[in-house]
Length: 300
Image (cartoon, rainbow, N blue to C red):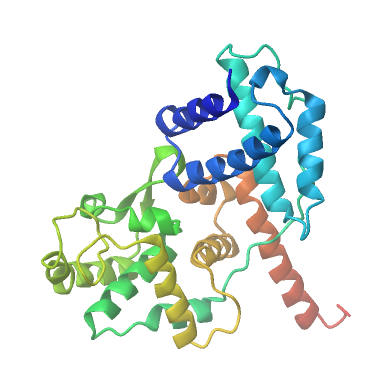
């Protein structure tokens, strides 16, 4: 099968049958474009001609470019290539997977950066409670911290997703739905936004079911949500880096520090594997170690 057609078929598969997000499919496409360009330069345009040695040479070449790619980028590239060839085998297009012996690069373990509770409270209080956009921003920040939602999940919420009182319906990766509690602080902030701000914003644009709207009435984008978080971090004078995932990390870390079971946190975060959630337990252990070192008379 021609490689360009194979890639198109695979991308249709992950979009339609696996329901991956537009963002994820876009990343796959960029990786596979690099792969196709390299194979074309090597004189290979058919899937049958791709061998394990060729794939290994491709990965080695990508690893040696200057500046070298980050380990995460290289791992994602390998995952994209591996996914393509596994798909071709499952569909009966090719008899063997040339990536079968390919080993992913060793990833450095990075612990999530969580804010302190005091920093979170300052961040949440940063937007103005008197200005319409400030009320919207406060509702967004409160909801992110109260539920541990990804930014993409928060901006993808519809008003109807709040129809269950003290719980919220989130749509995560692969269109998987989960129900999470929403605390009174977040509920009050969202209610204030819904009654005082959203109707005026909705009147400025086309009818939309989205919960969070921009100043012109269109659904709030992920990039705009990121700007909201960054502006709140600057206004609250938080010196550490605050990213779109920071409130999610803080949500998980503070739950575990408060005694929540890791399986419960896994369910709230929408992690497929508890191993993904357990990285937050290391953060809690580091906190305990710091407290011990500063509090115990014979710790040093």
